[in-house]
Length: 293
Ligand code: BG6
Image (tube, rainbow, N blue to C red; front, top):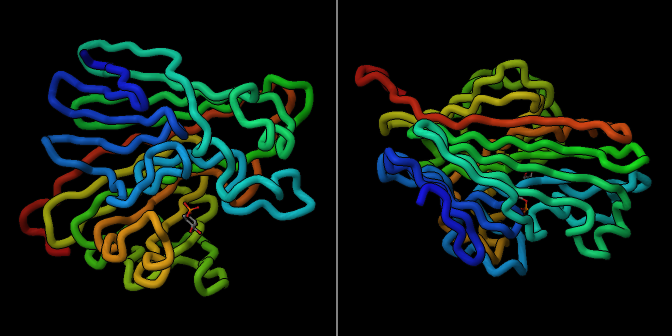
């Protein structure tokens, strides 16, 4: 079965052998396997019983990035919003020879009364996951189905499983202005991003649609191609932050990097009746034998 529904998650399997898994809780994608190898990081301590956002995978940030600030209407919402901590529903699935697709939906009637009071807007989200032999596309459509305009942030908060964070690079951000949330300053990125300690940086208005994440000494890496998403967040908690997270192993920061495509530097204003969409396609690339990184 190319698309199978287990109690809490949807599993997509492509004839080539690639696969992906999406929990209905948060529509959080927690696995993408290509050539028998996992590409997405999920913490060994992740809680997947619906009591907390899943630590790893691709949590969906909506309608606020981080904590909202008063007097903005998002100020009382939980960190990164409610989409990642609400149970979605599987609304559609299909397959052809090339692509296996599943669509998930969330609207205002499905969120908790508490969240609804904090953010009183009528909305509909459709999250489409498309799996091919060697790519994974995640696409979000946001619709304002009410009669009041609303502002939102969104982010595909992707945790990549990598062999060694100290060898990885993020290519495609050179020259982009970013806010360094660790040092609390802003600067222009010089060259590629490397991880040598805690990194929590928000790159705004990233012109390049392609971000490459070569693994380092090992062959290959991941390519992220974004559509309709202007910003990129790069995050690695490193030692101290890792030790402070109950749902993240103390040493796991070596094996992950978050490279998150979204709209977070500024809110998007969506008029009544309006819709917005953004997506990313993940693919793999191989580094020629003679290239030394
Ligand atoms: C990143 C933020 O996107 O998510 C970080 O830039 C944050 O500041 C990280 O620490 C993880 O957030 P959370 O809520 O899942 O612990």
